[in-house]
Length: 372
Image 1 (cartoon, rainbow, N blue to C red):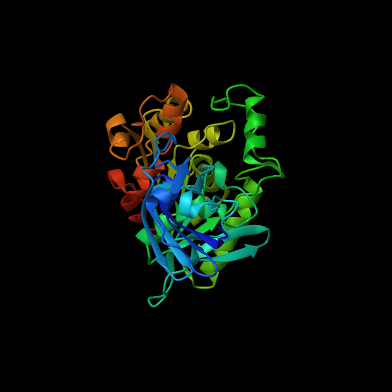
Image 2 (image 1 turned 90 degrees about the horizontal axis):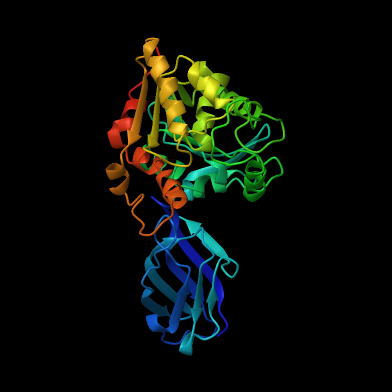
């Protein structure tokens, strides 16, 4: 069967970008099709991508257009839906799809300014300057497409849905000419890529992948211009990020501490740059949050040691929470059967899900801070 205009309808959910509806056209009129006319492969709905969904739940035909409805499944996988019988010849995957819609991504306008690619959600400004929350994505969101920072994980879109009266700024970190796989291979060449190696090479080179200081300085300048233009309330600018973006959040506080009323750093990477910053954290109220264990068993010990020293020095504006096994499991994290220890650590890394659901009132805490 010859099909055209395959479109995937996706949404940013807790486990990332997920699909539950697909449409396509059959020129000349579509035949009556049933769920049993399709076979699914690699369509999974759990963090470790081990649990397949049941299949197609409904097929609707209207003229030339066919709509498939499924349980939610992960877009990031190499999934495939193949027709058989009356649907023979239909192949639906990322390659055959001509369009992918992401719910509410169109809320974010595209910008390229001074070498910075970013997306911006802008609220209605009926009451003067508005607050701004800067979202820094994790390692998988780096690129030059000005798209992945919205779709790599739950993040910017969730913040815009939750905070419709605030600006949400989502810049995209550069790749430095490296794919995620190449960057990971370079880390592996140095040993365990998740091990905390203090004093090691950092991502601070001019052309490297990730949240470099020079790039963050340009992001800060864009925010300053938005404040100067009267768009943004200078007293209520916040920064939040996870994983590489959690480390990037600490880095941003060292680049432009005067900009921010408060910060949230989620499962931040610890290395020869982020570790010293955390030990000498600028005077910005900061909440750190991680799972009880994730990528590196030692990462949390370093974070706790640094935070404990800050508390001893009287930093009452620093908070830290370690989400328990039970708290993570309430969101399906760490509950996939028969995972390896490494797979469990990878699942537990998704502690940003709890933060973006405002567990421990972390988002409320951040937004409660207003600079004098």
